[in-house]
Image (cartoon, rainbow, N blue to C red):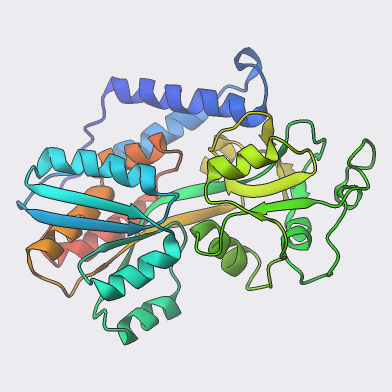
Length: 343
């Protein structure tokens, strides 16, 4: 099937509107002084042009249940609105109770679309099969960059992977580091212990950090546990001694994202670093469906995934604060669905 773009000039304007303010926000500088983000806009536009537009090839109806990640709630609602423009007889119910809940829900109802704001491991797929999900299939539908956030008055210049591990896990020491051990050697917080703020264990962010960033190391206890990006950033905005990890393109007052030290140098926490592949703290967002199901509700769920892999939905992902999945992963997902005659 030929892949031709349906993006308009207005899409370029939308990308400018999305990316330019976020560059200013992450850098904590006035708009007039912000770095030129035209390269990032051009790169994103080129990526979107190469993604296949959604074309309805079959009519579906009934209810689609989308369950799981709270981080993906906004983009799931955007996809729902776009999908129903093509399939007016579909009702979509979205329940965001955490990525861990997604795996439980698909065991209980094998026709749901499970959404997880992290990669899904092979052993998790095997556990689903043991629980009766005959053909659980993963689809990479977007990427998210995570930022390390501190109060805007905190002078921390950058942070390394080893320093993050020392802060958020008990692997190296039972004692939590002080800010001076991280490079803040002067000022009122220098000798104060770092206060951590985390998302709950049921969140994709927590699971991603523990399993994929810290390789299963035991997480440090005693920090604040808050439900959303907005809540954790609100907490950090009140206390210069706090630190958290949440979405890089989240927003909040009196906070800033810290450059990550990687490859022997600090990497800016901005969109261009993510798009160029330099930024190290990124994760995939995943949908899972049981492809063995063949009734009308299951077909509607699979068609919803089809829509999420296509151009309009990937633009929605950008609007929701994420980044498009790489083109080979989107096409691999479409190829998996092709066997069910959804393309």
